[in-house]
Amino acid sequence: MSSLRPFCPMTSLAAIAAALLLLLTPASLLPARAQAAQTTPVQQTTAAAPSQPSPAEQRGIAARAIDKVKQAAKSAGDIFSRVPCLPPKDGSKKMGSLPHVANKLIAGKPVVIIAFGSSSTAGFGASSPDFNYPNRLAAQLRRQYPTADINVINAGVGGEDAPEMMKRLQTAVIDAHPDLVIWQVGTNAVLRNLDPADTAKLVEEGISRIQAAGSDIVLVDPQYSPRVNERRESASKMINLLGKVAELRHVGVFPRFEVMRDWHEKQAIPVETFVIEDGLHMNDWGYACFAQILGDDIIRSVGQIKLGVNVPADVRTYRPM
Image 1: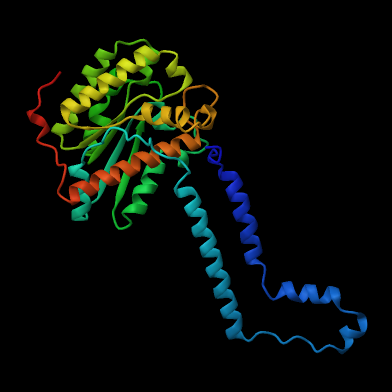
Image 2: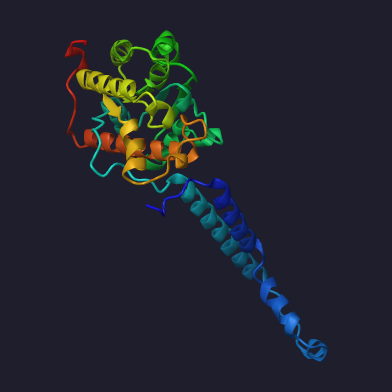
C-alpha cells in the first residue's frame, strides 16, 4: 500500500493555481510571442500585421476560458471530496438503518445531524475547521443529496467523556431536535482509567433519552492510536461494552478502533499518516478518511430504508442493561 499518502491540500492547491494561471493567460498571446522570438528584423517589416479577433470571436475565447476555469475548479473540488482510503476488507459491523434521516430525505424535509463528542469531534489536530470530521461529513452528504437541506452541527468539546456529556445532553443535543446523533465517546474514559462499565451505563441512559426524543443514533468508539493502545485492556473492554449497548438498544455503531487498526495492521499505513505527534488525535487525512467511511455507511443505511429493508423494531421495547 505504498501508494497511499497523507492528504496534502497545499500541494494540490499549488498545482491547481499553476494550472489556472496558464488557463487565464490569453491564448492569442502565446503563439504571437513565439513568432516574435523567431522573426528577423526584415521579416518583421514585411510580414502582414496579424488580424484581430472579432468581438464575437473574443466572446467565444472568453467563454472557453471560463469553461476551462470552471472545470479546473470542479477538479479541485473533486480532490477535496474523497481521499485514497479503504474500509476494512473483511467487513466491519453493520451500522443498521436510520429511519428518521431516511424519512426526512424521502419527504424532502430539512435534516439535522449532531456530532456529539470530545476533541476528535471538535477537530483537534485538523489544520482547519473545514477538515474536521463533521464538516467533511456534511460536504459528503450534500454531494450525495444535492437537493436536501442538511445541517451538521458540531457539538464536540475537548476533554469530555460520558459524565460531562450527559450534563449537556439536553441543551446540546435533544433541544436541537436532531434526526441523527453521532455520539463519539469512551476515549477520555480510557485515558482517565474510568470504569468502562460506568461509561456504558451512562451511554445507555443517554441513548434512551435521545431515542425518546425521536432521533437515530450512531455510536463511535475510541480511536486506534499509540496513547489509547497504551491502555489496550481498558480500551478493549470499553469497545466491547459500547458494542453491547448499541446491540441492546438497536442503534448503529461505527467501529472506529477496528477501522483505524485495519489501516495500520492490514493496509500497512504508518500511524503518523493518520495521527498527529501527540499520539492521540487524528490529522487531516485521518479525519477525512474517517468521515468518508462513516458517510458511506450512513448513505448505505439510508438506502436500505428507502428500499424498505432492515428496518429496526421499536427500540423502546428493549430492556436496559
